[in-house]
Every structure is written in structure tokens, then in C-alpha cells.
Image 1 (cartoon, rainbow over the protein chains, first blue to last red):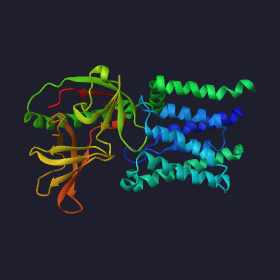
Image 2: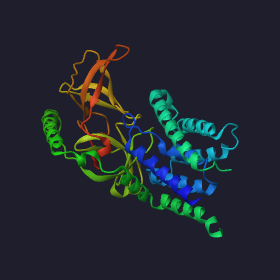
Image 3: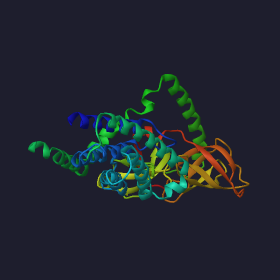
Image 4: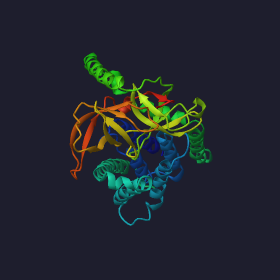
Length: 148
Length: 225
């Protein structure tokens, strides 16, 4: 159990480092940490997920007061946590659907005009996040079972 | 087992407290993970080229400055504490706020180049909306003839609504004329000019002399004219 949590921490750290160091387009970046949190919700218990999400907010938050984007960023992994067993498909397909829907919800809630303004950019970010999410999911699923 | 049951709720609570009481701790962690700005590891040759380029820029800017009314800016020096982490906006958080007599709307410059405007203020910090933000729009003039244009922000800021017959060339300096921002503050240089898609105006792409990700400190202008 400890090693599973430690490995998920390392994956979250890797996701953050990749997000910070690999820019996508001009002034934009992939949302690897956000995607990694959605995927982690398949392998963590509720309080473990709470801790990981709070840590994610701690390193992502950029201002001294709460913001709508940060609240959405924190809520989506919990929605994923709630839906992971309700969705009828295989867990990898559930993860795929939740990464796509979670990213769309995050962008639509934070800045609905983003889709109209930068469709290509959004699709690139979504595709990059999905690829990263699938690699993380299959890596974790190889060693650990999806949480009941 | 009983002790571990409370471990994650307790740890989560502690981190939550940190987020609300000491958010700067998170900014420091993120800044550490981002690593040193590229400019710090540039070799001598690159710096020499940049130096020559900057000298050329100074010469160009001198021409603009000589045509402007003289004024002595009062400013507050501030350090960039954190940056907007998502793709929707382009904002910086700087360590100057109400307690440093920032009231909102002040221009923010880096090396005499206008990079943004104070948008939101807190006790000891402020949020700067930069010209790379999609919401940025401001009146500017271009080149020695002062051709009017609208600067639209974004990942690649560009000039629009330039008179179709106006003479704008690559290399012309773009400077601010918007109310509330320092008159004549240089913003960028024209990279290329083309007709707009409706053929009614000209548009220009811009060449900026800095990388926003490398900026660590800025000046907040308090008496813009």
C-alpha cells in the first residue's frame, strides 16, 4: 500500500515536472498534473485522493485567494472518483472517457470561449493529456488493481 | 491501523492550512521545480549577440523617446512570485500590493518595455495581466509616423485595425498610447505586416525582445502619463 502511494506521488511529481518543463505552443502547456490526478482517482482510496489533490492544489495555486479554476481543478478528480465504478466499461475505457470529459469540463467551466478561440490548441492539449494519461493508467494498472 | 486512519485527513488538513495561510510556500516549490530561467545558462557568445541587439534597440527607442514629453516615472520594484498555471489567461503575481501603495490599473514594465497592467490587488501582492493574455486590448502607435493600431493580446500578440494605406514596416517600434498606461512606453517591434482577411485593414505580427518565462522582477509605474 505504501509503495503504491509512493509510486503515485512520483508519477504526480513527474507529471508536474513535464508540465512545467515542456511547453506546448506559445505560452501554453499540457495539463499533465490534472490528468494524472484523474487517473490516480482509479487507484487511490478517498482520503489518499484528498491528500494528492490538496498537494496538487498547493503546488499549482498561483494567488493568495481562491479562484474558480483552482476549485474546478480540485473537484474534477473527485467526480472521476465517484464515476469510476458507475461507468459500465473496462477500467481503461472509463479512464479514457473521464480524462476527455474531465478536460472538456475543466476548460468549459474555466473559460468557455477557449474552444472557439483556440480549437487546435485545445485538441493538442487534450490529445497530449490523453496519451500521458493512458501511459500512466497502464503503468499503474500493471502493478496495482483499480480500487474497489 | 487506528493511527493510519487519520494520517491522510490530518496531512490533507495541514496542506490546506498551508494553501490558505502560507500560499507563498507553494509558489516557492513550483518555482524550484521550474528551474533556472534559460537566460541564466546562456553562453557568452549568445549574451554578446543579445547585447548588440539591445544596443540597436536602444538606438531605435531613442528616436521615439526624443519625440515624447519628458517625465520621471515613480515606480515600485517587485519580484514575480508566481505565474498563472493554466492556459486560459496569462497573469503574473508580484510581491507588491496595497501595502506598497498599489491601487490597481498601474502599468508594469520590464527593462523599460511595457509588459502588462495591474489587474487585481491584495495586501502584499498584485496580479498583473500581461500583453500575452487573450483579454488584453490596448491602443498603440507604430513607428516614427505614429500609425494607430490596436494591440490584441494572446500567445502571439498582434496588431490589428491598422489603416490600409498606412506605412508600417518590419522593425518599427510599437509603443503605448492607451489611457492609464505610460505614453510612449515601447512594447514590441513589428515582425511582419499583411492585409487582414477582409482586406479592409492591415495586421502585423510582433517580435518581442524577451521571454516572459524568464522575467523575475518588474517595475510598477505609479504616475503613468
